Length: 100
Image 1: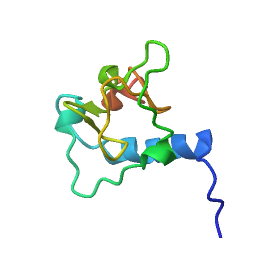
Image 2: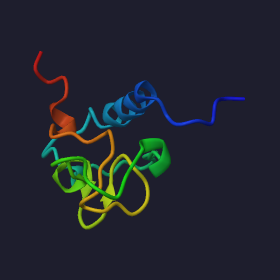
Image 3: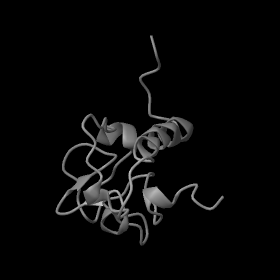
Image 4: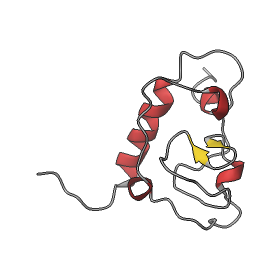
């Protein structure tokens, strides 16, 4: 049986990459609120290493995956605007890889 321990950074990045790849074909504004796939699988808070407090000046409210008032494209459940997880970024999901 697979290891039930914490999700490794590599596994988290792979899961995030899969979520981002699912949205690569979308056109238009690159806002998390506009991204509404039919069957989006999200990480649990535990798998995403989500915490209710910020990490320095990094907070969910500033991440493009955050959806007002309290949810996320990548992490399931209620997400606090002042929370944080390792998927935090300031880059839009639609901007990744578009520089070639």
